[in-house]
Image 1 (tube, rainbow, N blue to C red):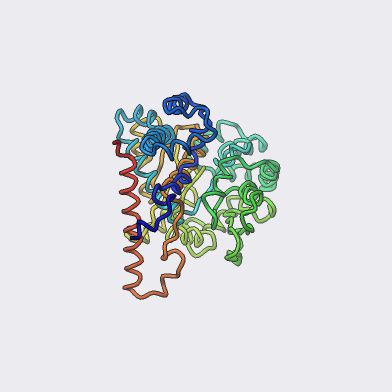
Image 2: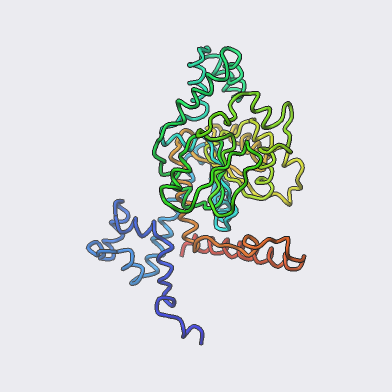
Length: 418
């Protein structure tokens, strides 16, 4: 009886057509030879919107073409050819695919908080943090070899300390202003953040790309939170952009010098009671962090995460992710993989130096969310679970587990060739 009450659109699943916007666009534009061949084989090359015509007239053919398109795009985005060349088989590609699907599952649940580093700003014209420190060394007149040795060892703060010893902190601060106060247009990868995240973003960057992108699309008010100021808190109505080390609008509050890092994180050992470590600890315990454009060497933030992880049972820890450049040697890849997992961070690999791959990965993740029906908001996320008794919280956990299992089964079915 219920089936008979369904509309024609619901019976034929026409509402699902909107889930596959990128595939439909690919088919309609027919820029690639394979799309043109497909349209020609169905006599659709002169139709105004061939994707919709194929969906309505031959759904099995549409589904098969979509599966092939999806697999091809995933192979490209997740660097299948590269990872198989590095490892000699499909082991590391399979790991990449599984981890990517795990990330998509967290994105759908809206549990992910992006942690944005300098690498994301490169597409706009800003330098990586490593390149910026090279520029700082030139301005301070430090021998290039000395700077390179420190950078190679991951001793970024030591570069700053060396500059301070030779000249003073004001030289470093002015170089920060000269570089990061530029009003540059946000690149597409930053606009992708506006489509994937609508609550909180954390960044170590001084530039203004993230807030500019959100303001340009008029999504909702943006609240800049300077993490160096303990009293600043999210207002609940705005998108929170947490500037971990300060923002360029108030350069005097930016964490720049080695002494300022000591004050912010603790001298000698990380002090988790200080504002920045406390904030990082909160998100490590309660969010699924996604590191984008971050080097993840042994800097102060990593020291915080290592200490927080050491205090947590593994069973209570959320899964964190990083989109990482893949080392070109399988032994180095194995070691880097292990060191990140030791920090509780699951790496998803892309080709070294190919920064456009980060955008492609995020874009494909967005499409995967769409393929699976869009974002979902579990009851556990919209209600304070502390107000429920143990039985109610257990039911909420079961509901989420069932949803995740259903999504995994759906993904397997979609990728099973007829």
